[in-house]
Image (cartoon, rainbow, N blue to C red):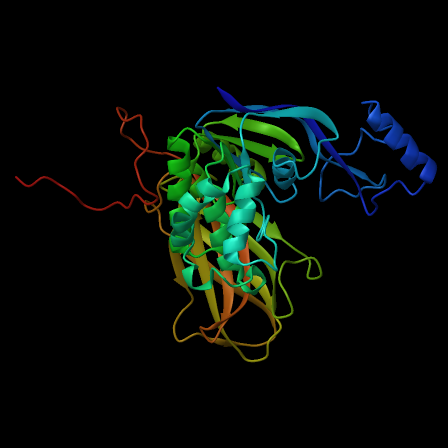
Amino acid sequence: MERIKVEHIYKQYRLGQVGTGSLIQDVNRWWHKVRGKEDPTMKITEFNDPVAHDSSGFIWALKDISFSVNHGEVLGVIGRNGAGKSSLLKILSKVTSPTKGQIMLNGRVASLLEVGTGFHPELTGRENIFLNGAILGMTKREITQKFDEIVAFSGVEKYIDTPVKRYSSGMYVRLAFAVAAHLEPEILIVDEVLAVGDVDFQKKCMGKMKDVARHGRTVIFVSHNMEAVKNLCTRAILLEHGTIVSEGLPSDVIETYLMSRNQLDWGKEYSEHEAPGNAYTRLKSIELTPIREDGKPIISVKSTLEIKISFWNYVEDLVANLSLHLYAATGECVFNVITQLPPPTIGIGLHHARCVIPKELLNTGVFYVSFMLVQDTAKPLFNFEEVLIFEVEEEREITNWHGKFPGFVRPNIDFKLQA
């Protein structure tokens, strides 16, 4: 049974203004709307590309979005910042309405789109639980039956009678998620807000969302944590510039996202005024080179990988640690290496670093690199995130093996039967 059906949804925003700037145009828009006709001031040529310069004053956040979510299904929504994920969730939560198209929701909807969603800051945690329950259409008796379970899950028992305006962001999220998940909505919509919570609470939330789905309710989950999407969701969609570009199994959609996001770029170089960084440091370039006996430009399990980094330092007599992290496509850290100890002292200017990953260490798959410049082993100056991405290909001589070895590393370790 379909819980959610979205048909040809469009959402357009006018940049910088609420109205058109003309009373006649505003009245004309209102008159078309009450008659069920399209907005006469809409443009159909502008798309949601946050990088592109827009001269018309209009932008499409969503364009021709259609999908359905069934009873008991967990749908993951992924994509870059600005892809239209939050706009889609706001339409599904009825925070805003689509410019064109329609949605059909079969059941009560609970949404957690940002910290403090649906909470009144002057009311206590206790009062907000009952307020949210009433908004969801539950009776006072139903809310009372769930009250102790909600408070226990949130971990804010000590502050339950304190106005929520005095809560930290983490306390806000814990209580808001506990209310949304325990008051038994048929549809639960969760945005990236869980990133505010600590690791233990995030695990509790994932477990609770799985439990919600097992009981036949529907979950829509937006996250940049690919591992969470992969483990929690039964299906995923990828948004790009306001349109769906991929839909299917989470592992397949995640791979499409990672490949399209970075296009397997082995190198980047910047001018100083455009380079990522801050007042302490900026990245000049990063380059990945496969080193092979046959000289082929192939990254495989038998390729030694050389990573060269150049960066500008703007701190006098900097005691510099360069920390390089290698991540798997799903977000787990494979390893972290740092420059030599004791760390060197460097001056203001351009500096270079080099890291070599030996062959027959990494397994096949997509990996990405982040690195951080740290002062005196304690003060991070800047974290250059996801500056390099690459895919390790297969190159094995085992002809009767057609699967993928498990894990992120596959070291060539001697393992033999003894006679």
